[in-house]
Image 1: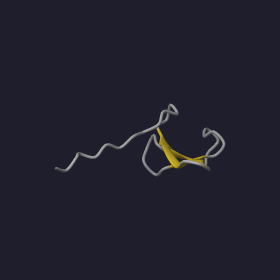
Image 2 (image 1 turned 135 degrees about the vertical axis):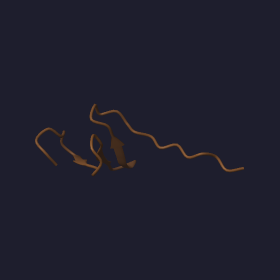
Image 3 (image 1 turned 180 degrees about the vertical axis):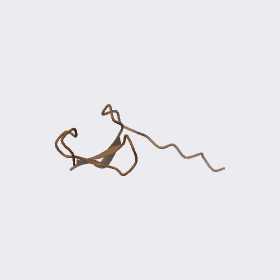
Image 4 (image 1 turned 90 degrees about the vertical axis):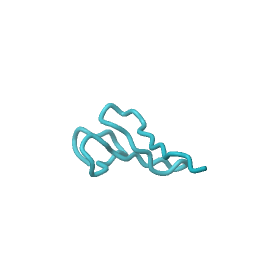
Length: 45
């Protein structure tokens, strides 16, 4: 964690991303503006 990160947030190892630990939801990946980052995988038929 660095001085610029909010409490409970740690760097994710990728520039501009961080991980917030939520007791109910688990790890939440966020961008540098605090917006949640989602990963979409292509559907397989």
